[in-house]
Amino acid sequence: QRIIDYKSDNYDNHKAIAKILKSFYMQSIVDLYGDCPYSKAFLGTGNLYPAYDDDQAIYRGLLSELDAAIVLIDNANAADAVVGSEDAMLLGAMTTWKAFANTIKLRLLIRESSSTNPASVAFVATQLASLSTATFLTTNVTINPGYNTTTVDRQNPFYAAYGYTITGAESTNRSLVTASKFVA
Image (cartoon, rainbow, N blue to C red; front, top):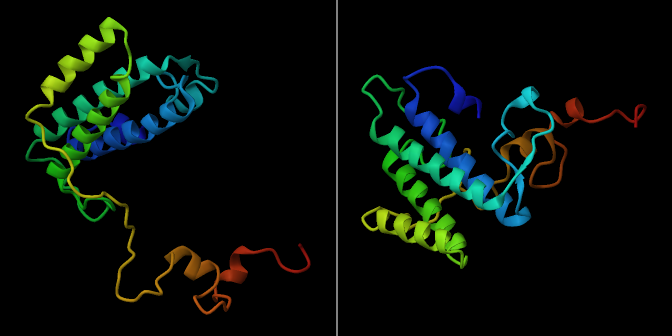
């Protein structure tokens, strides 16, 4: 949310990615719990007890968030900061981010398509029609924060630095982050 709220016109692509990821994760929360905090949930200490929103209203808000992200991507200016290696998912491929946003929109609409409410049926039909020429993902999207396939025995770099090695030996930094035998 802080990326979305950041006051600068030169980070539109970063803001679009933040909106897409926010929608992706919130959709999972709504699918799991139904009604949950959304409209007032991202105010930080400005609202420590946000009210619950209706799940359908959240879906509609997520669709709007995704539409806004696509507009940001389409209208990013030449001075916009280039998204690069800080993007552990798609390495700044904004056309793929746009396809990801469309794929999430489609998933949201499929979830709502089971409703028999006439207003929902009409809304879903209109939204699906607007996606008729959209591009969608055709491959899996994963987050890779630096792993590689040079060897099969790769492990999480953080755990390798502060936990145990692949052989089970303590890493040299492990004693820096664990309680000593006297404290334990």
